[in-house]
Image (cartoon, rainbow, N blue to C red; front, side, top):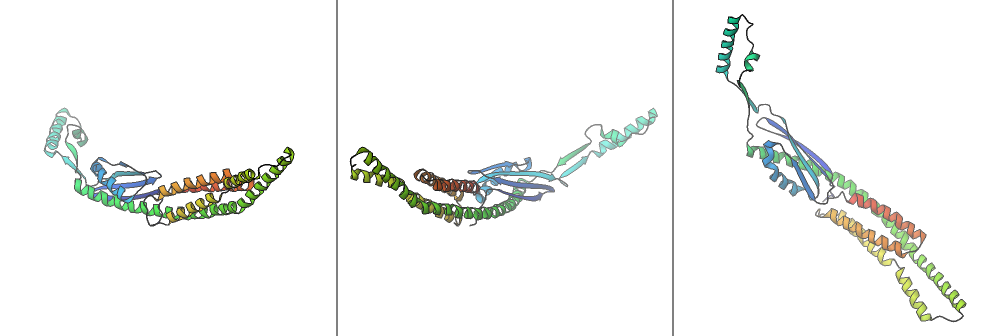
Length: 295
């Protein structure tokens, strides 16, 4: 399956019994899947089913779900107590005539008592949940599509950076034998100088043993081989058909690559290789930042 980013957005609208709702989904980086739902009272009962649906579609990311009532045309009934209002108007007209006052207005009558009331139609829970979940599914489709598009771009960028990292490993692998040979030659020269200063021969067996130990400690072949294996695993993970735990595996491989680079840098006492290791670490940090956004 395509690589999926953890950043995405999706929205959808739906209507039930004359009430129009809009919902939005937003997701950003997170080590696991975290969902925060903000639902209006009419849809509060849908939170559990919404959480279950999101968990079916997404593995990682901090997800926020917002739903709000946009309009309720046709969902509100106006009730007027006509008999009471009519009787009140008649009585006010009589009083006004007796007092010689201006005729009473409807506004004045409406101020007296609860003659007008508004009644909102209750949303049917089953119909509301069905429409809400269908809209949530559409919003998830849009969010997942966006996460896949960004994931593809991330994967391409990571593959290109892996090539740069591999070139730096090639440079270190090419230079390392020459560096080790030069260090051994300097050690031999020092041994010969100390031997001349002391005026007697040193134990050659012991000298050769120490040189072999030094050569083994400065050999970076194992680190480079393991680093290449991690790079191969990184590529395989990016191209894998299994989306599960992809981001976590990439994060682990990035840590292992850093471990090998640190060891390589500490074993090779050469300015050129040290510079290559620093460049590789800079590139690896960029890889780590990008990989952290992969689900």
